[in-house]
Image (tube, rainbow, N blue to C red; front, side, top):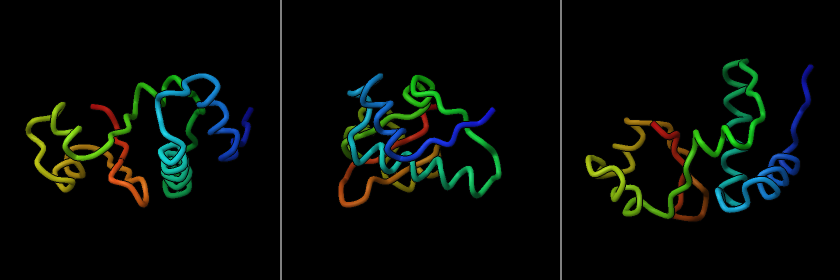
Length: 98
């Protein structure tokens, strides 16, 4: 059985269950990334707020990320190491945790 999740449903579920994990802009970018991933690969993703919170992290900027991953010096390094999801019009971004 499959339920289609709209962007509004996606954001509402996060704000209800895990309101501090992602910014509004971050949720917007994450939804678009996941939706495009499904379209590009044909693979359906199970909607699981807790799983997404474990799998992805939002960062304020490159400097914050570098504090956790000292081998990283640039956005290119992040892109080479993991999934990088930019948040438009900000320095923030989301990465797939590894």
